[in-house]
Image 1 (cartoon, rainbow, N blue to C red):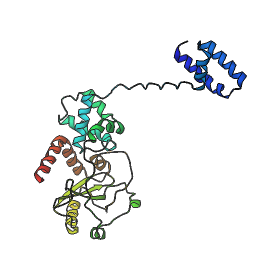
Image 2: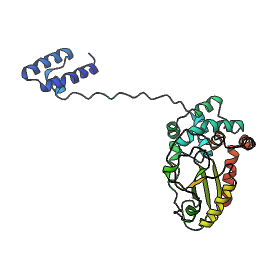
Image 3: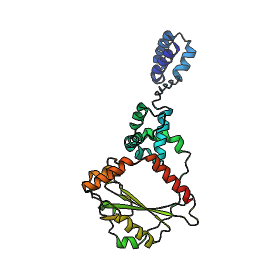
Image 4: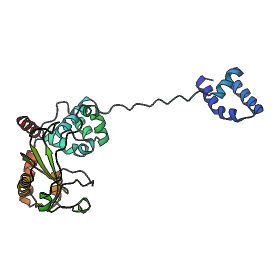
Length: 287
C-alpha cells in the first residue's frame, strides 16, 4: 500500500478512533496496523493526528489570448478612452468592423485574432487589461455644483420619470479639462446624452457660468437630428442591451429617409483611428 493510501485510511479511521472506547480502539488499531504495516506507536500517532489532505492542484487553463489579441484589445481600449470592460465588450464587434473597413487594424490582427477579440466577455476584457489599467491615475477632481437657472428654464425630470423609449430626453454633464488640479483657469465641455439612443453632442465652454452653459445648450439643441423634449442633470440607473448611438437613432424611427442617408454616409466615412488622432491633436493644442 502506498503512503497516500495509508494516510487516506488514517483519515477515514481517525474519527471513529477518537470516539471509540478502549476495546474498540484496540480493534481499530489492529486493523490499521495490519493493513499498513505500521508499528502500533506510529499508528496511534497517525490516528490521533491524521495527516491533512493534500490540496488538489488546480489545472491551469490554457492561454486563449496571446500577444496579438492583447495588442488589438489595447488598441480598441485606447480608441475608446480606456473605458471599462462592461462598456467596451458590447461594442467590440462593431468597432473592429469599422477598423477593418478603414484598414486600421494592427499588422498582427489576423481574421482569427479579430474574431477572438470580438467575442471577449466584459470580465475577460477587464482581466486582460487589468495590468495596464493599474498604471493609470485614479480620480480627477470635480468642479461642478447644482445651478438654479437651467433647471428653471428647461423641463426636467427625476430618475423615476424616465420612462420614455423614444429619442429626445437628455442627460447633461459638465466636464472640466483641468487635469489633476482644479486650480487656475481651464476649459469645459458640456455633454448631452440622449437616454433612449445614447446620441451624444458636446460644446466647448470658456467658463461654467449659467448663462454660458444655457447659450451652449441652445446651440446644441438646434443641431440635434431630433427635437429635445426633456433634460436631466442626474444619471438614470437603468440598463438595456448595449448599442451605439448610431444604431439606436436608426431604430427609433423618428428620422426622415434623407436624414438617415446623411447619417449612414457619415458613419461609413468614420475612421476611429483618425478621429482619435484628431482629438489628441486638439488636446495637445489646448495644453
